Length: 590
Image (cartoon, rainbow, N blue to C red; front, side):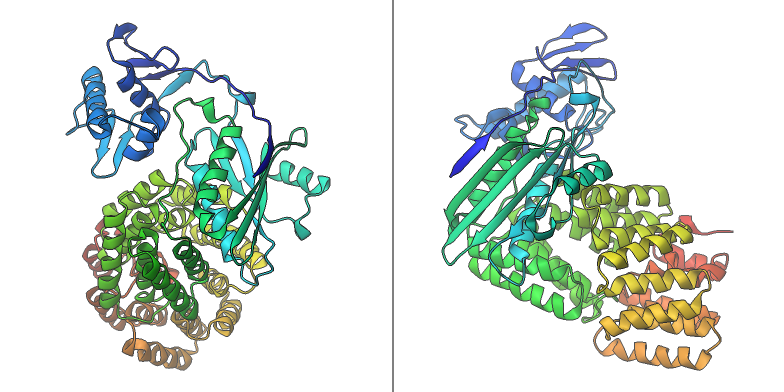
């Protein structure tokens, strides 16, 4: 390994106030209304760590690494339990009805109330921003899943350090791998970033070389540069080493109790490699891609049967296969398989953000457990603040609940992390449409199409937004484009039928009903059939299919809440009964 580096040095000891208490980070003195409250140093360190991660889930493992360190020769579990008891005693807090420290069973702790800091010496008084350029794969492979997965892991690890002080943003790769001064100037102006992390990877049969550079964009200096030459089997250790080194060089002592989080990877590099391929195809969200994704997840588990992320990946696949989005399994069968794999994932690693994200999806799509869904999305984001999928799926949940500003906020967070992601920009447009901001939505969805003209779902949602403002000729063209890219997509077909019905082409709409219904041999499209009947004004048939959708878990059933096709029925008592059946009676309108 060769390296050159220069590190920043900041001092950021502060006094943290919460309620009637204040903690001095430098002296570790706790005061209540100005009077000193006795507390030993180790519990005070734990309290400081929780305070600096206010509102976020902090796992016991993160506390161990930050406070006790890697090499411990004491009973950590007993020691941490003692510290938590001492903190609660000092704060007069109760585990059963917490005012300050919430226990999340089997996961960790969360500090609840707002805090106020004074005396910090942060650079320019603002959050540090680092842009991560996709790691360039120099191996000459056609599919860059490995570099993409490594980039995602790097962003995730950096994002877990301290989201309140370090903002991590993904940016597009440089053309031809070159970072010209003009390109960097434009990047700094557009995103207002302070530092740039870039790197490359080159793989051969049994060797691996990873290079990484950290640039200070304010003075164009290279703060740090390293090259790692390893055997391919050392991949996971190298990833961890690079992440640790970058975080240290960023002087994350800005909050002394901050620690660099790490994922729990497979012991097998080959299993991890297969997992990365699986995730690469999963994001494409087509029938063929999901099937390839599942094959790679199974391959990963054949190499390491205890690899939790691969189980979570399979649960994701089954959840999609049983939905109208992919539509290749009966929902109840898909749900059973998704639950089974999700349970295995959580048995292996209860702190896996991906697993909690999928559990949130299952609770909102299949269980109609709305509070449980929100809780799981929050747990996932507490474990990994950069979990883009959790931010996207959480936004859909919030839109269903009518909490449109929060949905938009969730997506703005996602776009700060991946500003040029097609999916992120698409979901932002979808949330704007759900909020009734159709002009903004149409412009935003067009931007997502520009980012990836080959993604069928962008055209499907473009069609839905156009149909919402009665531009049905354009909507039909958009649905036809989506179907040209993915001919077996039931969503695009059903909404095409709805727009045909809205234009007065009743027979074409009914013909499409028959085509969608023919998919019953493999999945449950009832909620989509209800969409077409809603647009045709056939209320009796619509309610019959909604009832069937509820009984057979045609999912996501909340389409009947969000889609404009159901607007004329929102004051109908029968529609109110439907809302009550899916646990959303509070959305009923008089």
